[in-house]
Image 1 (tube, rainbow, N blue to C red):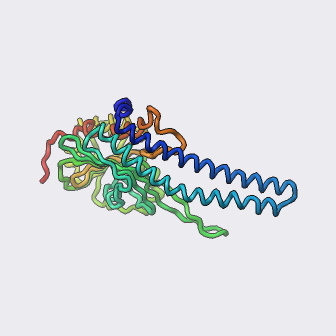
Image 2 (cartoon, rainbow, N blue to C red):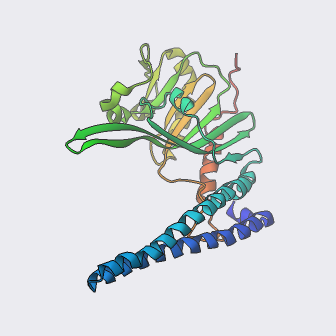
Image 3 (cartoon, rainbow, N blue to C red):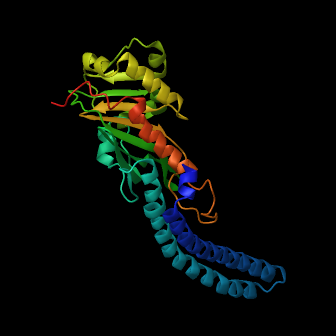
Length: 318
């Protein structure tokens, strides 16, 4: 895939143009850092030679110039990053699948994150970006980066302190399952309950009639716990073949995934620490492996349709 992109004349033209802009931005940032370093040096020298006023006033000039330059270049940097996502990532996606598109400022809405029932804690702070959508044969799918957090507050003699805790950071994948489920079925990592038990009071989902579904795949039950209000429908969804495919998909992930089947959609949460699709500032765009990690994650997400055999339409929507 990288070789195809490297030999793509349109892509190379875009990269060459952006590389010029990147160098200007990187050089300006470097100048800002040098000015701030010079300010610190002037202050230290003034302090050592006992001319503190000279040190204080002498360091103000490079500090002011550095701050002004920094805020001016920030606007250029944001435009450069947006152009990278729209033009470089956007063009590269077409080499994987013509239907793929990226919307950098869109993502998975918070209401959909909560209604997916993948997690039992309501976010107090929610960020999402880089919505990628496409279609493989009969199956539409989309995914986005999500960072959801909740807060706790502690009080001491110095006042109230707010702490932020991550509920989830990674990619949430959504696909059309071509079946209108009568109830929700949720598959979570077996050890997830330990991490959230102390915050169970913040549970925003109702599991009044939900039962743990005992499945016939021992390996699946050892790794996941499955909840549903309809045992028959849960087993209808989680066939022996589907459970094996989910286990295979999970083995390809760095951390244990979570899944849910709600309405006519399937949700999968992949915990990830890496931030994808970001334009480099201090590294060249003209390197062979520039897009390797970004395109690998896109191909991985797209292949879920094949991994879980979502194009086999054994049901029809009502």
